[in-house]
Length: 300
Image (tube, rainbow, N blue to C red; front, side, top):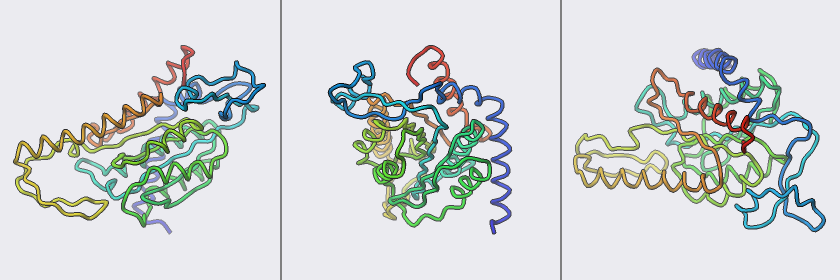
């Protein structure tokens, strides 16, 4: 039996996201992710005799080898939600924690998918795989997906994006649209991202708190790394300390986004300080940009 407060929260998310999907996202979703006739399935390495017109030049350039596109008769699409449950997601200095924001954004994507008769699956992860919900259709299934995110009790504290992406490769045989929700406070996942992008439409959604960009001036303070439990005494009044911290945070962001652009990936940045809790605006903007690009005949 779910707690009453959790039920109320799930219902509130459903009402809000359904209205948002109906008013703003339905048309964009179809134009972005839906094909006609024959649907793209996956890519594989070129073999002698393959039609050269099927060569995927973008993937070939990324992988330093020749890959061709494979097509099948169009069927419903599969959307996979990869949601980071590491301890750093519990951090939040505004209205909601990063994990709560991720849950709301995942709900928007899930309701957009079922409105178009697509299947939705879920992979919850930390430094291990916490939960896998196989893709299915329907409102009842999506409500279960949202409940799993909000009611999760992860065993792990850390973040291992490579483990999550490698698991994705094992449980999804066909090309899917994959939304990866995380704060991306992690490293060592570059190769796993490259492999996943070759098969799937991978869309990172980075959720951050503004307090993570700049240290507040609150004197000498004992701080804890939520994922490792490590404690450290730092002087937040020291300009050098604040400057070094800001430089490191910015460098990690620049490196991360440089890799995504190099792999020709779209990505979404969301902050927990959105006015009145409207965290969906960057995601809505992403949908609109993709729809506009699709109408112009560009890549989606």
